[in-house]
Length: 289
Image 1 (cartoon, rainbow, N blue to C red):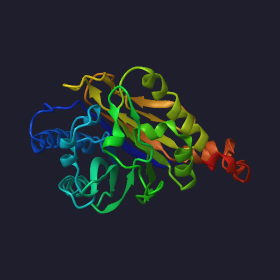
Image 2: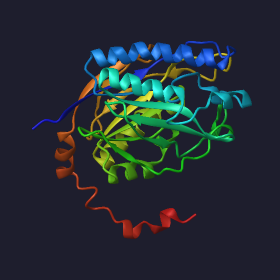
Image 3: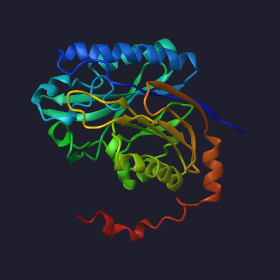
Image 4: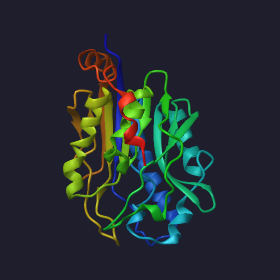
């Protein structure tokens, strides 16, 4: 018996010059996404996920304290409150990645999870923080996440969140599976190069190893003035067999919508008993510093 959940992923290019006031930049991106949320709702989406730090450019391409002022509280900031309203209007769950301010000087790369009735269910904070050239200076902006790997029960699906660079680490992907995730959403901001090869390699492997669906989101375009590379889109859904079942374009804004049959998880796990055959008693050395 099928258990179908319709999901949408929104990939979008930055719409406002980076030298505008921060409030104008964020308003322009939020306004743009409001139209895409309606498009997802019109397509019948029950869950929609936005890209990493969706309401602005990928500012981690530089190390400038100005961007600290782009952070806001979660869930009590204006962006999350607005998205709660949108969730109530459309009756769909929304995953909202933003720059979170816990207190002055303490910031996280965070995704809030909002239920279809607008209730705030909780948040995931990006665990693995890169600091690599050229242009991924995230340790300047974010503390490593400290909330573990929560799974959010929507009633019709159990979902988890992994953010961008997290996808290179199988440990958290496994933790999400053990915690009961059926769909893992990965909002990202990643540019062409070596990353593009890994984009379609690592996350399907997580789907296979853990017997769940992956929903991977990446922004599109080139962002001035940094121009660190081309954000190559190609957001996709992957099933528990590691097959990409729907994929967005490489260069354009898009709302990618697909039907996911959660019954496939049971079918796959009856074949591949990876959770049964784990040997955690043998893995102690993996967590020794």
